[in-house]
Length: 147
Image (cartoon, rainbow, N blue to C red; front, side):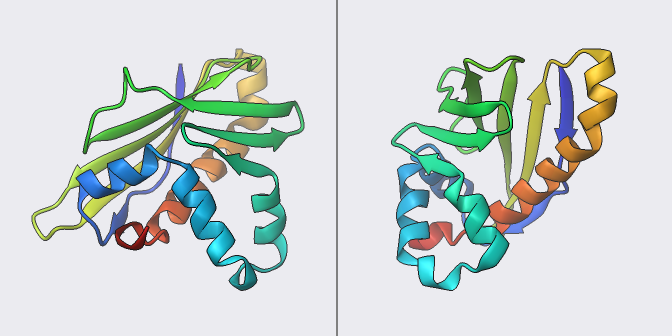
């Protein structure tokens, strides 16, 4: 399985709180709805392609809708949140690694794990790396302590 790992980002919140929020994606939907008037342009269009439920995230893609369901077996409280794609043409995991820090902050790293054929990997690896980086940046801007 190929891994595309984004840059680490500091989040001003403890890892256990972040884990509890990330394992309930409907909270993110509530945050988006509460701040819809502050989300502009292209960011709004991207959010319109994403749906959040109690335990999954559905994303509209060129391949159709991809649903990422919370994988409680491989997630580890306060350390790692894993979402696994169901009904995807290739196996996909979206992983958020959490590293607690002494000052009640958390270093987070977003990771996309895919099982891609070699020829396809060369075509999309730049986009997947960019996706991991952007996802990590997005996580760093979520006010987890206020959800």
